[in-house]
Amino acid sequence: MDVDHVKEEEYRKGDIVMGLYKGSSCKLCRREGVKLFLKSDKCESPKCPLAKRAYPPGQHGPVFRSKLSEYGIRMREKQKAKRFYYLAEGQFRKYFQKADNAHGNTAEELIMLVERRLDNVVFRAALAYTRMNARQVVKHGHFLVNGKKVDIPSYIVGVNDVISIKESSKESFATIIEKNKNKVGYSWISSDTTANKYTFTRIPTLEEAGVPVNMQLIVEYYSR
Image (cartoon, rainbow, N blue to C red; front, side, top):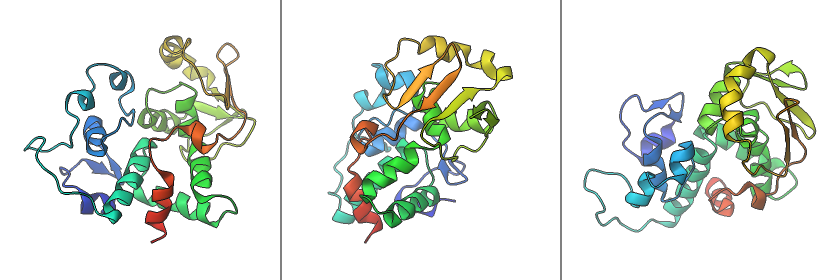
């Protein structure tokens, strides 16, 4: 169980499975006060709960809440990033440790690592509705990397690696491919739906990734 979650918020039993939150995704956006795009199209529609109730969830509604401490501010930024990429505390901490041991800027190295996860690349390539969905379809073995089946969501994709949908799974992805055919993609992923090739052409920068958090505060949180 994710001990960090238990310390911070009172979640219902059963909401946390293997360190990942399984409750209402919309509550997470409201808790963090920013859209984390956890519910696909709903996040872009007027039905988004954050647009209607722009305050943290709780039985007492928008009551006065005490100001966060410096520690609390940094912790909330870390939580936002974890939830944005749908990662457990242990996973995210390991990525930070790897980034911190690298030679470059820690914040940029951290983003480079999580952006290269196979589940994230599948999501960025518009082959899954959310990162949670991307993790599921990868684990179910629907994808190939350079022609070889990979069912590990945390698999790190390399530059110029080609992701493709397994032949027997193509029909299952026809709807989402058709739905997203006019969607503006990401410059670091070359998508050829006709040829069933999605190439990870380069590693995105921190700015390109567009993560709605202050990464420097996350570095400060783990470095304390």
